[in-house]
Structures are given as structure tokens and as C-alpha cells.
Image 1 (cartoon, one colour):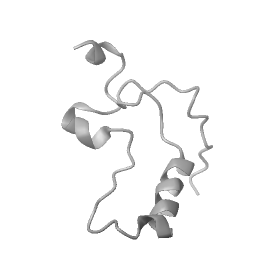
Image 2: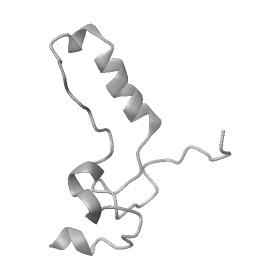
Image 3: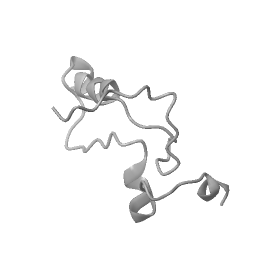
Image 4: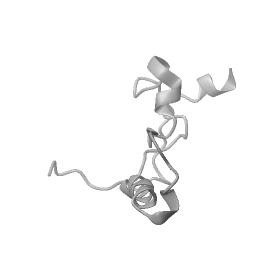
Length: 73
């Protein structure tokens, strides 16, 4: 819809994302497939953040981070 192409998640470096790479629509789809399957029948009242760890980083994460220095502590 926006004219953007699906990126190969293994080739793009994203230092501001805790996993260090962009997400893939298939990763979100896998969580949805699990939640819609019988395997998740005991899952109850949970929120699933499929964001590569961005939520855990809070305001420190983001596209403004241009190097891996923050990982070194």
C-alpha cells in the first residue's frame, strides 16, 4: 500500500533495535498462528509484543541510535 518493499531482515543493520535487525511480517504471523491454534488454549489474558525487544528498552530505543555502542554498556 505504501510502495515499500519487504526487506531481507538478515542484511539490514538496525542498531536501535535490541535484536539488531528489522522485523519480518512472517514473525508476527507466526505469533498470530500460534495464538489461533489449539497449542495456545491455556494462554489467557496476555499481551504479546512482537517488536524485537523495543518495548523493553523504553524511550532509549529507536531509529535515532546509529551505532552499537549502547550494547557495550
